[in-house]
Length: 382
Ligand SMILES: [Zn+2]
Image 1 (cartoon, protein in one colour):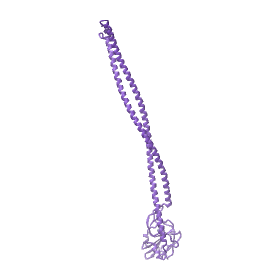
Image 2: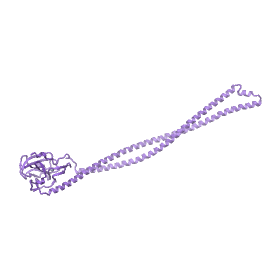
Image 3: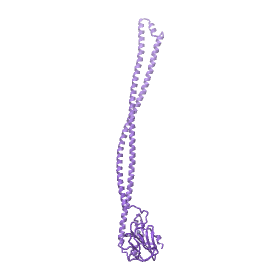
Image 4: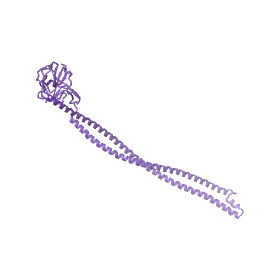
């Protein structure tokens, strides 16, 4: 009487809402379309990246040239500045010399005029005779000429150095203009380079993201293909099993065929793949496909132990035939026999349906011996 406790749910599943084949095929198709679109984006991105990388390479070369130019110009600027320093020092020296010489000349002239003994006049008037006087005038003249030429020589030198200094300063200014220009060029190249590098970095990130998406879609497609393939194999195996079982004569055995007029076994007894969740399980009975409302008959005389709704089985009937033998009928659209009723072999007990966990109208039929599920076919055969 407590056999029912040991029953395994026939078509139980937590994946009642599993996707159908056509939904999976749609998904596969969508995956392939998405992959195509992403691959196009990926190619575009890779082309853009390639083009910009080529630009970056050119900019790098250009920048290297500008940097080399800058080195040369800076070197020349340093040399010019050194020259400028040297020339300035030289000019200072000349000016110092000029000051000293001018000062010495002034002193000598002042001394000659103020000192009676050595003054020009004294020098002239202390002449002993006319010849001496003439030679003394000549001496004085030479002294004056000497002083003058010395000073003007130094002045000429000063002018020459000042001219050189001016030229060097002009050169320096020209180089400085060049430095400014080149530095501007360098800055602009560096800015462009950094912008392009940033673009390459972004394209790189895009590329990685596209590849990641393609991989994800690929994985998903493989999984869908695997499931579809498995379902196909399961269906082929189930069809082969059904054909084999269907050819067995069903009457004349211990129990009678419970659903006359319908012998298509959609799922045999034993190990199978659950039709809803696709998992392996042990099927404790046979499923016989038949339209809703088809009469289901008691397989033997007995007492109705259960007639009601059980989770998973929907409307179901359990009949105890005595000697440890019981039969079970599930997924009915309507219960006819009631609990405690004594029924005869071939009496209407239920109508076929698809209640509980079921993929379509069928009868789930079990034969139990002392609570253990047996292959009903063995009890149906003569
Ligand atoms: Zn079943």
